[in-house]
Image (cartoon, rainbow, N blue to C red; front, side, top):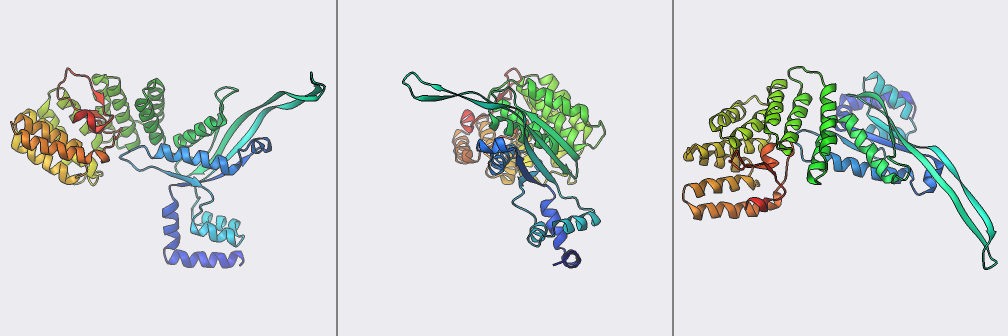
Length: 404
């Protein structure tokens, strides 16, 4: 098969829509090729091993529960249909030329592990105390660095250098750092979300997460409608809640609203704070900006909408609009029947009404749904328990059992 034949086949595939499908399914996939220095491979870190560690770490980062889409990074061993066919025919260069003509540059990354400074192994041979020959290794060190080079349609061409933290640093650690650096380059928001959540869950210092978020905000243009900036500002507000600084949290939730008025999360997180601070009517107004308009880009997300109705129901409970509150909780449960928090807050309302038997049934449903319990770091209601008492500090949710 010659390049002209491949071009003809590709043209037919394009006519049938298969090329577009191939491109669509791989638009957010970063194909990874790995090369390693010989001395590194001798230690067991073959390209296959490094690929495995790298991709496993990327998958962990990209699986952080999020209300926005995440990129997919996988090994180059899994190729698009067109690339696999071209490789089988030995015509990858022809395919590349066709992609260029069509304006398609597939995302790709190359990982290179380089020995920056190697201290050669020195063996000293001498007679041992028992008369036998003994060999001693007196030096065997390698200072390594990992270089990521590649192309992404959003980021353009890039290169990233990752070094070990110390001379004794675990090589696996350096590969994991490289994976985080790759996601930070390809999707900075997702990387910051993962870093914040990781530190919060493991009770680690939040300062590096704050610095990372603020560094990203410095790089993002301050223009209205910038979804990435709005989400990052919202995340800075969540970090402030983790630090129990409600003033700063509100400041950033309001900034998120201003950066992208069509992004609901800033409004809902402000509403969450409103309830906590006994500003119930303002909370309802903020929620209604989200649940009523049909043009919101994220109102198709049932988890987000369900959370909106939960906040509304809690605010209505506190203002003794019990009929409206029950309707809000019913709507929330219909949108997300696997939710457990809906039934927790619904039960609290029923207890206030003096209906303990019904409240216990709602709590039973919350226990049944606890297997689906999940935190979403972007959404205050799904990351903290709402105390409804402004004087009480926020507690990050760690399990459903806390509220049962």
